[in-house]
Image 1 (tube, protein in one colour):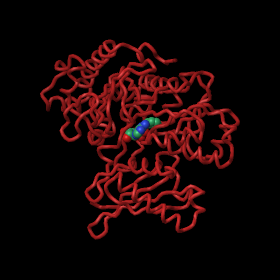
Image 2: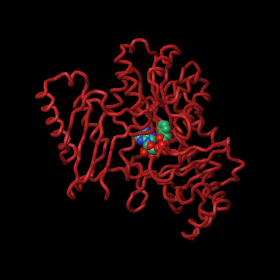
Image 3: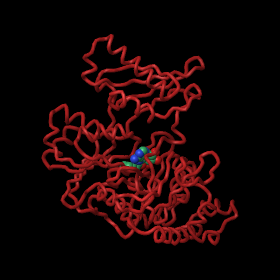
Image 4: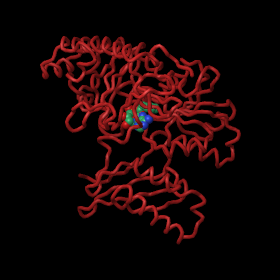
Amino acid sequence: MSYYQPETECASQETLRAIQSEKLVKTVRRVYDNVAYYRNLMQEKGLTPDDIRSADDLSKLPFLSKDDLREAYPYGLLALPLTDVVRIQSTSGTTGKRVVAFYTQNDLDIWEDCCARAIVAAGGDKNDVVHVSYGYGLFTGGPGLNGGSHKVGSLTLPMSSGNTDRQIQFMLDLGSTILCCTPSYAAFLGETILQHGLQDQIKLKAGIFGAEAWSEEMRRDIEKMLNIKAYDIYGLTEISGPGVSFECSEQTGMHINEDHFIAEIINPQTGEVLPEGTKGELVFTSISKEAFPLLRYRTRDICVLNRQPCSCGRTLIKMAKPMGRSDDMLIIRGINVFPSQIETVLLNCGFPANYQIIVDRVNYTDTFDVQVEMTPEMFSDTVKRISSREKDLVTSLRAMLGISPKVTLVAPRSIARSEGKAVRVIDKRKI
Ligand code: DLL
């Protein structure tokens, strides 16, 4: 088993807690002294830095939300003079004001270390060719994994997203062994490789896929198509980017880099901290950041934490795959629907994970349409067979969701492909 930084990845609980306490106390003091926005939030709760003596005092601190980041945009949460900052990244969100995150050189080093841990956990070392097809630029995916790969000493291919034929050409010519991209792009690359009959010529052994929700069924599909082991990676721009947590060989959740981030699970309605093993909203406090440290940042990701011993030897707590967001859950005709549930049904029924959910409101009633791509085999079936498949899918979706969508099977490759995060939901309702 290899580790990138075993002294922390495999440290005892006591050591990790002591690191967290020491760093938290320092971070709180620093933001109170340097960031008026935080000082006000703490003063509103009657808190001073002296009230935070260890990680056990974390729950006394106020939460921070995306709205706070928008309000403080662009420099209101910066904890250092701008002249000490060397990089800006930004969220991939398409609505509202973007969120910007700032990094000092030390912040970048730590972020890249986190990504290096993920690459090593996926079996990477200096002999590997790491093919990075996450977007580069403001999005953190490309720069994060690129930096991590450099730290590991692997040969790094900064492909960025798009131009699928060129991606595959480089993969073949340069013998890429580890692919980093969104799971939906990995599936698309897999499909294209199979279509061209090139599966025996690629040398991939592992993939590091994240930035969007994907199911276990989708993991198995990608693993089969590309003949690799597919690892999950999680992160968010506000907290640094990819590598906040990463999967190991056990593939039963992602280890959180606890020497840099303290995780909590809360009840999204009340803000109450929930015990380990309970489902709730994930909250992160960054304790190593110099430029943009966030205290108790509400991610809106619904998740579960678990500190069972892991066969890989890491002691870092694990988070489950996010199970949806406390804010992207669709409420259709009064029923809660998670896109991930629909994906699970589709894959279980033998459909590819290329689908789109279209929700609208007509005459005060919600409409709920699911368009699903057929495989080429299904597409050559008779019209009668296709419509019977549609009916079967409606039955399976109703069983899972408690509500019936209108299902339309569409031609293979007719749903627009994304080079970044897939657009799964089109909600046209103006509520
Ligand atoms: O998506 C950072 C990233 C890049 C992570 C590359 C992994 C790989 P944002 O654009 O700020 O940052 O989006 C963050 O994406 O709050 C989750 O809702 C979702 N997300 C990220 N990773 C996963 C994952 C990047 N592995 C938001 N599974 C987060 C499910 C994920 N959702």
